[in-house]
Image (cartoon, rainbow, N blue to C red; front, top):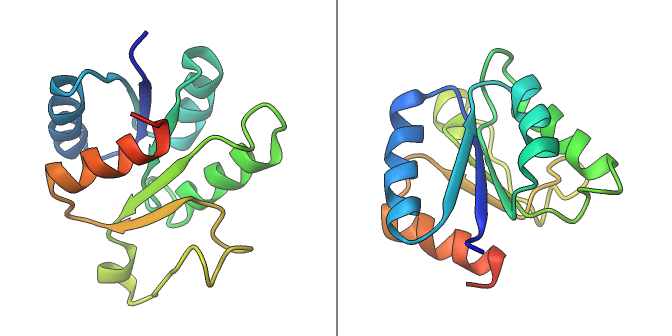
Length: 128
């Protein structure tokens, strides 16, 4: 069965572009436009990796979703790729290695990301 990616991001145009890129490479893609729906879909879809925005309805909504994913024993090891423009918009620099306690994600990627870089990161975390 093809690996499944869940995208949680309120930018519908970006989600559509990522969907096209990922599906063309054989991934199954589900998406949600907010954290609440994303957590619900996480339980329903059981993805192999999550691509998560930081700023949605709330400025730190994606971080709250990441904390909830990490606090659940059923999903704590799920790869989370945080794709965001938070640094551009706030000036706040984040690094998953340096800020591990604060930033519970596997990758922190600034938008925009090239289709090739996106595929490489998703493949890396699903073992494809």
